Image 1 (cartoon, rainbow, N blue to C red):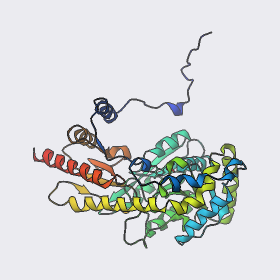
Image 2 (image 1 turned 45 degrees about the vertical axis):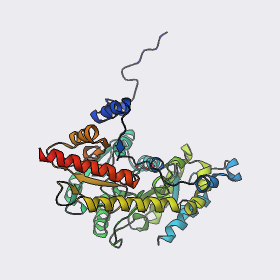
Image 3 (image 1 turned 135 degrees about the vertical axis):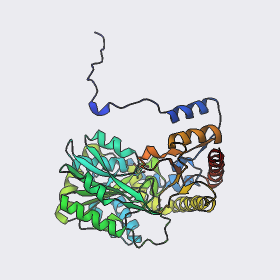
Image 4 (image 1 turned 135 degrees about the horizontal axis):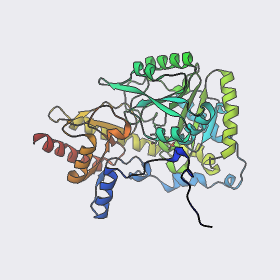
Length: 401
Ligand SMILES: Cc1ncc(COP(=O)(O)O)c(C=O)c1O
């Protein structure tokens, strides 16, 4: 008998549009003719020429304990204790029993969605924000409802839009702190309003803090890490893919905060979810305490690079150029607003064809403002500067026509 694919063989949640977009098509054509481009979208730290030392990165993995497999669904105690020590240095006191290790933040979101939501439930997510959440929510049969971030020299949460998006099916308030790509942190007054809304509407909060330590604001006193807040049921996500620039080692964590009864029930259930998959590899868990020491130089190099690249934008985008640089407080990205003679996607095509530079269009991140592009700040500074100079030249040519 021959195989016949049934019309409904695949789940509805996997009916995606696999059509290649114009930008990806253009990139392929450029690649095929062997032309080089300056890629200002690169966000993979292992691909931007950082000074990783083989010894410092790989030696912690050479450990006899890695020959043994005795997993703990919460994650090995030694690894959880080393995370507590890391937070303690920053004045945040956590207990290892309130931590659960995951293979990364995507895994963490997935576990929390399994824990909190039923099919058809809704979660609140900011726009702009990074696109992964739309796939994660589809895979969990839940719906995203957006609240807006608005810009007036700084990014703020538009609480009217939060209220409009709330419904009896809302279960989670997601904060990305600092947000990708706007780089904006949650401020104390915003935290208070979010907590109030969460308590009134019986929501839990997820605060995704994978970029937390890459801050470039001088005054940290107004910003809030949810890992240090105890009144509302909250899951704070972080991991070494950004913090220690080790995405390949697949290790993240969830900090559970809130009233004791919530923490206990949430952890019991999360442990069972985690025990079903046991996704986190043992070697990374055994290496974590050492990596917190040995990877400090890569974190420092990356932080300096982000500051240097942002300073270059601050110094070179001035009132003589028809470009607006949005204020960055932290994270790995910067956003530029271009003259709206073209749409963001058209600008991206022009930069690819005429300037040999690749940037992301704002619509990838659900930008409301027209003609925004997103640049990665973790690029090697000389390459970054060359790319930005090419962009500025092109904008000047296009806007003088
Ligand atoms: C805000 C944010 N959270 C989480 C992730 C995914 O992180 P992980 O590698 O820990 O899954 C990304 C990826 O870029 C991100 O931008």
